[in-house]
Length: 156
Image 1 (tube, helix red, strand yellow):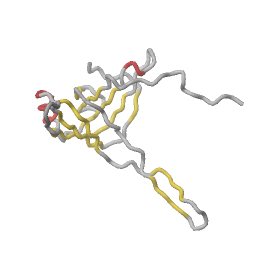
Image 2 (tube, one colour):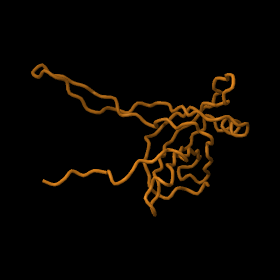
Image 3 (cartoon, rainbow, N blue to C red):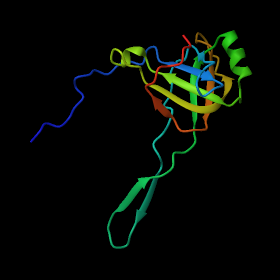
């Protein structure tokens, strides 16, 4: 019997240098980075389950249902210029790109980029003694998240 396929020949990478961008175009021709993100939460959730049961069996069964619309809350360190820009693009429909670090792709290949459509709202986070000032950027996703390994639009 053949050995099962594994992926132990590759070590996991860290998320340092992951980047979040906004563009008004699907192609990302006008990318602007949303800088100083403390973290980038999960962009999508697994579909809710649809369950069923029958009187002639003693267990329930399930299948994946729809993916619920959700929000993505991104904590961002506050800077005056970026805060003003985020307020200018509030509620504008656009495209978000999350670019994984370059070192996560094998040499000669492109890193994973997740892309989706949505809009955002920015609010100030709690102010407390001896803490960094932050904004919370809430993204309202309006499309499914697509994975791409194509060359990333030039924004850097």
